[in-house]
Image (cartoon, rainbow, N blue to C red; front, side, top):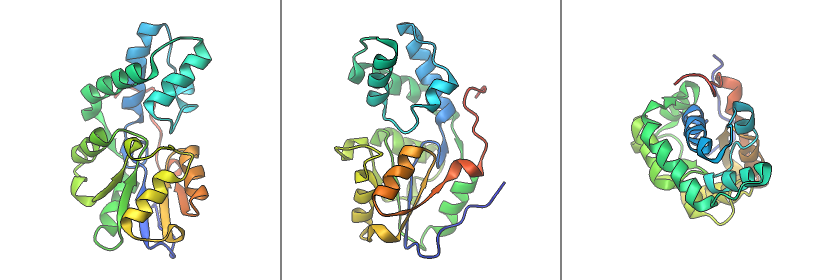
Length: 202
């Protein structure tokens, strides 16, 4: 497994959470699959891959367009998050990223910028034993414009008290990399450093 490294110019690190620090994608996939069955949608790993980085409500809206369904996006999005919370203990750490968090804890300021819900994001970090490694966490509830808009990462930089240009973002999705680029930040796609396991038993 390749070792992750930070850019020498980096003065702060910003991490996405799902699929970056925590291997939660298989858990999110299973949660969607379980609830969408009730709406006649067969949720496949291939379909899930096209929705990476989109918050739950946006995902349901997209599925309505794709399948001509009329699900209440807010209601079903929250229903999905409830299903996810029941099984989120199954998540695993993404080792190369967690090693980087441990390596730079106390050396560089670090934040989490996630498209997920704040309460569940903190719970994920707690499950992985990383809750005390981050003081700053910007969630979907803290921004008006989710990724690929740069607001999430710009807010992280502001709260860390650093300029965007010296922030190095770690992401697993194209939308997140797009957001980091739009924010004027350095970025690394972490999926090159671990095996994606969506669709396998967890």
